[in-house]
Image 1 (cartoon, rainbow, N blue to C red):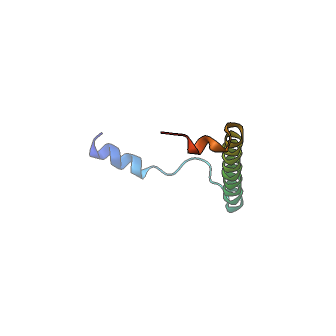
Image 2 (image 1 turned 90 degrees about the vertical axis):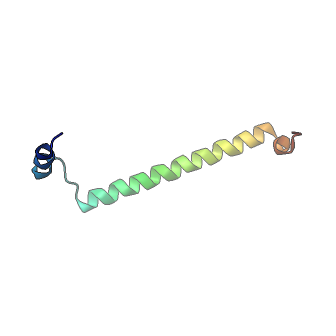
Image 3 (image 1 turned 60 degrees about the horizontal axis):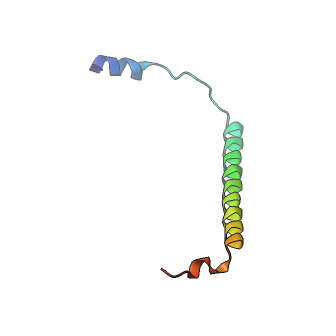
Length: 62
């Protein structure tokens, strides 16, 4: 890409969808809810794995 090609792209106006503040807050709230749900799922799977394997899984001989 030449220098003039880079300048032409910088001169273009932004195109696309602009989200309102309310939409950005809703997106952030959804993202946090999904992250918390995923974290809870991982913890549940970990606990179920420990219960199924038993408490002695961490004290095995090396």
